[in-house]
Each structure stands twice: as C-alpha cells, then as structure tokens.
Amino acid sequence: MQHSALNKASRGFTLLELLVVVAIIGMLAAFVGPRVFGHVSKSEITTAKAQIEAFSHALDAYRLDVGTYPDGKLGLAALISRPADTPRWNGPYLQKAIPLDPWGHPYQYTFPGSKHEYDLISFGRDGVPGGNGDDADLGN
Image (tube, rainbow, N blue to C red; front, side, top):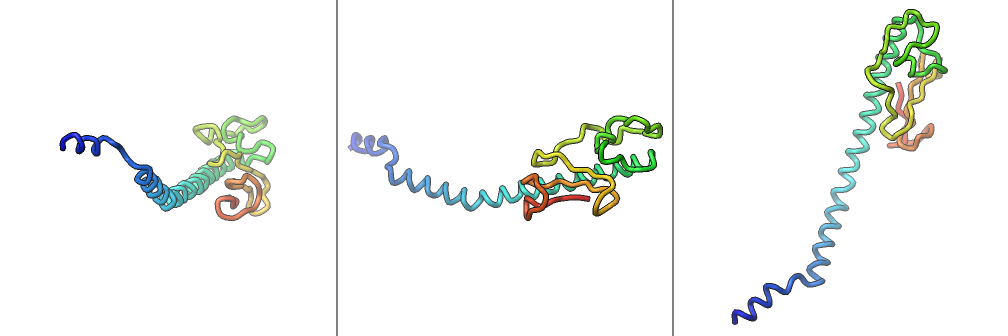
C-alpha cells in the first residue's frame, strides 16, 4: 500500500492540469494588463505636461532677464548656454540638459508662436503633429 501511494504522489501534473493553470494565468494577464499599461500612458502624458510647464517657467525667467524669448533658431538651448550677443543673460535657466519628451522625441519650440507668444509642443507618442489619445499633441 505504501508503494502505490508513493507512485501517485511522485507522478507530477497532468497535461490537462498544466493547460488549466496556463489558461488561468492568461485570463489574469488579459484582465490586468490593459489596466497597468493604461496607467503607464497617463504617467507619460503627466510627465510631458510637467516638463512643458518647467520649460515655460524657464522661458519666462529668460524673457525677464533678456527682454524677449529666445528666437526659434536658438531654441531651448538658450536656456542652458549663453547665446552670442545677449549680455543680460543670467542663466542657466535649467539645471540639466533639455530632455526628450517621454516618448523619445524632441520638444518643438517656435518663437514667435502661432497660438501663443511662443509655442512649445510635444507631438505625443507618434511624434507627428495631430492625433488622438496618446498620439495627441501636448503644448503650452
């Protein structure tokens, strides 16, 4: 009797039992996955908005010192290093180099802007103008 109990205990899982476990794990991943990745998308958008806000404050400080916003050719680099012929520059206005947006694309800065005094835009996940959802443009 001991011998038959030992064989049953050591024989392992059947294929059907393994398939049931894999199916359960698949259903959990299908249910939880979209919720988790939805939060990642929201955090990228929040990060882009926060960076645009920080750049806007730095641009305003630049304007207070120099008298105007940096022109489009200088771009955001004028916040880090002194442009030629700007004696009233009192920067750097940002502590670190200008990062890419959360999707790995450069921010677009234009002065004068088409919608505001200057435009500062992230084109979203797709990196091209326009779009909806995660691909929507974010700007000042």
